[in-house]
Length: 253
Length: 281
Image 1 (cartoon, chains in turn purple, green):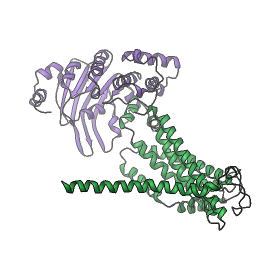
Image 2 (tube, rainbow over the protein chains, first blue to last red):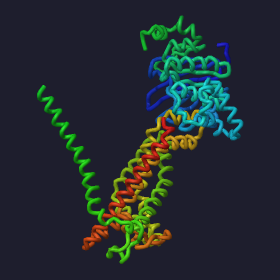
Image 3 (cartoon, one colour):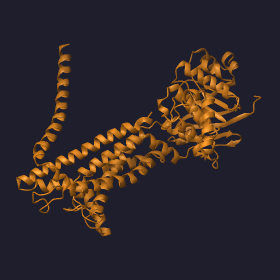
Image 4 (cartoon, rainbow over the protein chains, first blue to last red):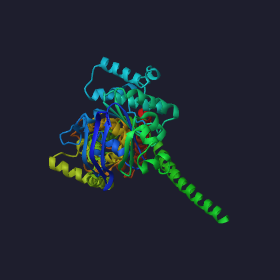
């Protein structure tokens, strides 16, 4: 790998309720690239993604060992500040979950809790982030209406804008297009490709075609283990491992 | 084939019958109250305190009990909310991974929910004796607060559990602290809070046993927390116990007033719920 790693996972093991979900995971996620995590349902893709911003902490019966270094800082170290870690990463979940407030307040929520109070600053930020996600022209006249009145595709872009508003370095997408129609999916995918100039993007997907369209690197996870990791074309077109071959060809799912 | 059709018919009839029992008893109860109470309903009932002392007489109205009941139920609901909201948040958002503890707490309030109100009345009375409070509005509010806390905690707990975990994750992943996340959840469940208030107020205003020892009774409208306060259920109890037909009729009129108050609150809560659920997912 010639890229400098942005997230470096070292011997990560995750147990949830005595089940070994992630088994000795070590991987370096390259900086300012799109990396897709692929694999069958229940293989640990989402768990791996959530371990990056410590969202696993809240589940019952979770045991985590190993290290996850973000910018060379171990996020599971006892002195790590969890809100600071999470601020570095924007999360885009499977379905959009707008906060129960207006469009404007959704985008301004993050900056507000982190201390930005000035109206003008917030106004500029909201406009900038809504423009970055291509939503500005669609919503600029109704910023104070409820976010839930937007279409589901617009809601997902709003959630992306909301995540970008805290100025993260990394965007985590957990099957972010699975609830969307093809047009919205294409918009979100294009956004990922544009955004990788400034952000490191890690996506979980079980759609191989999507992984191929958007990602630079692919991680194939199977039964809690990393089977193969490499540039997209290599993993998809010339897989080295038998399991990867079978998965890519559709013999296992 | 015949047997299957008969079976269908049989169970369908049972369901219709059961529905009729529910609907019928509602109309029967309201009908009885209206039929017996309406002739004694007049403006005086609503706007005057009783003449002739403790409902022996036929003069005046039950304004003292109306106001007293609103004070007691309102005070108890506000006090109850101040205690229940933090409890519900704590159980749901600060006890991750401590399933045993949160389940024990849930069982505790379920047990409290089932305790008869006379026990809360007696317990409230003990507290009052300990602190040297006499039968008064304050005493009534304390006892009824104990009564409504389980109602409130249970309702809020159930409502909070309907909020998708992803919404919490959304707030957390923006770098929110737990309390900031809790505030987002509280916003999300605002309609549920109104439902909780309604249920609590409804239970509070209709309960007689908890105020029996604690609120006392008075022909006057209380002007301070330390004065005894009349309540509608107790007023109904006294009036219906009278041997005089006219006073009994006034009892039904009081029951009608209580029913209407509860009805207004129900409608109000529904309107509020609709109005504020606009941010709901």
